[in-house]
Image (tube, rainbow, N blue to C red; front, side, top):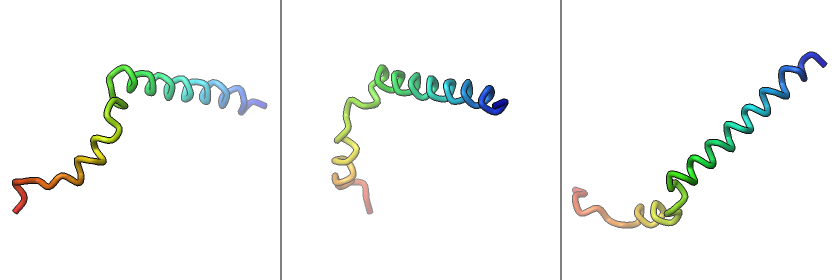
Length: 49
């Protein structure tokens, strides 16, 4: 029972931290171009030797 007193607040803080990170990534545009990176890997670089 003593462990739950420690684990529940830690779990809540981690969950809130993850939620804050998700909303930060939405606000800064991290999810604006989901297909761009997948398409850029197929484009041949002209500077390649």
